[in-house]
Image (cartoon, rainbow, N blue to C red; front, top):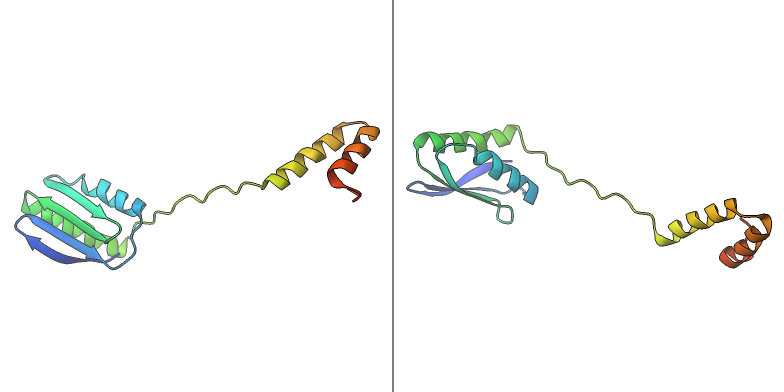
Length: 122
């Protein structure tokens, strides 16, 4: 992820990226930048791809610049966990029906099978 200087006024600086930034990436950048001493008012906006910070010492400004440059060669690889696929209600019902069929007597299995599955053979 490449950040370019958008503007700098006094001890306020804004960097922007043209790359897509997720909320998770913005959160990680905010957490890591908050560890830099004398760097205050950190705001990372994933919608605009900008990083805004107020620095109180030149060392903090240099540390911010070094961190943003390091993202070029070592980007943050944050991915959301994919949601666990949940079986449909129809599939869940068939699983329950199979359990009932396997546990009952043959008379109950035939009547249940006829009601649940119709005339189809199981």
